[in-house]
Length: 422
Length: 157
Ligand SMILES: Cc1cc2nc3c(=O)[nH]c(=O)nc-3n(C[C@H](O)[C@H](O)[C@H](O)COP(=O)(O)O)c2cc1C
Ligand code: SF4
Ligand code: FES
Image (cartoon, rainbow over all chains, first blue to last red; front, side, top):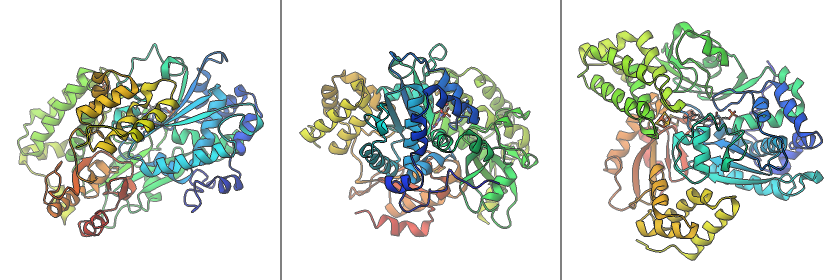
């Protein structure tokens, strides 16, 4: 396997110091980009095969091509640093550990699409990340990697920090734009207005994830061929019942089993029960899927909602009560629903009520069909993907772990909880 | 309670406004400036923010009420946010919460009588590698065990 590069400098004690960063070859990618035509930079990113790391996996170069090239039109680049998908913590790790990489990626992306102003929409709770980024941005201005006439190229870029205020839905790209405009973070209707064409202030906007832009910095520094030779690395956030939870840089398509091994395996004496292979909006998969590659193609499994998402692998061993886990997952979406559309606003409440009943020993056998029915009612009917994130956990556990629901309902009690305490 | 924003806060809000092509983009940041100074977003404070940015008070109120991190009544000096999302749930956040409630002798959402801590739960704080975890003010702490809570809380006066 190729050596890891995304995480290579994360542990350096001088992280965030521009001189150290430049000393290690930092900002070479930006220098190289500024010597190319913007269209060439986009081509380089597209040929690298990079797909967005925010969850949807859309080709980054392709996305940038949708931005109109007319120089008379004001364009923006917006960084999605609102990391909130349960189980995901890679963006925070990059921001705190290698902030100049992100700034370099932002400058390259902005140059490529012709933006003169870029914004980082940073999750409010990232206090440490905010301080680190503010310092790094100031340094980048001082050294001419941001601001006027960057490195004598004639290209100007202004980079502004913006803040979230606690709302998971603000991570959805159109809701983020609303929030960045100072409004309630409610998703916009798309089509017709994709951000690349009508985004921030209704101007063409490239919206990218933190990790995506860090990849861009490496791609421009080392070239698309080198990047492809690295085997499309991706950051997996691995958490839950593993011995060494953390962010791991592994080739795209690493199997669930290998991911768990990378995180040092399960605790001793425990066996694997299930996992979310792609954050809490993905399906919950049992042990017979352990050799499934965690790739965008995960979507090809015949399991509804199996997807890579933000590459958050949440591992659950035999002490896990899946009814409780799914109930908690639904509660999250219920709390974070923006309330704009009925299936999501009401569906999450109804499902939560059924789970409450089951977990409090008052469940009825009909509740299983009821859960399935409400989930069906939400499938394909929600205004944005938040609502659509609820059914996968329900469908998959009803399919793979139905006896666990039945046991709860029939006996009014949970067997595995006792296991956890033992 | 303070009914007026200081000139320094207004200057800071104007600085934020100047960074964006449209002034309303500064609203989220401005509300934090105001909240940090006044302790909470009291109606008079919201009205002042609205005036500085030149927005209808109703719009500012509506925006503020949408986001979890704004508060409309005062809280303790240090906000404790215990993550209870999946990875933290799997790692035993329940035990941590119970211990915290007992140690502080307050319920969820409550504030200690000395005004030192307010206790809340939170959704995933993007630090699941240290589950179960919490934030106290701006700081992350984890992995937590009921035994190491005292030592952490002692750092916050
Ligand atoms: C409910 C919801 C929450 C999201 N949260 C995030 C997030 O926190 N960070 C992120 O980068 N993308 C998030 N996304 C995905 C964004 O909408 C968008 O696809 C992404 O930021 C685009 O960047 P990329 O092309 O670089 O992946 C979220 C999507 C949805 C539907
Ligand atoms: S699906 Fe949920 S979060 Fe998305 S628009 Fe509808 S109510 Fe809002
Ligand atoms: S689930 Fe607690 S920090 Fe992510």
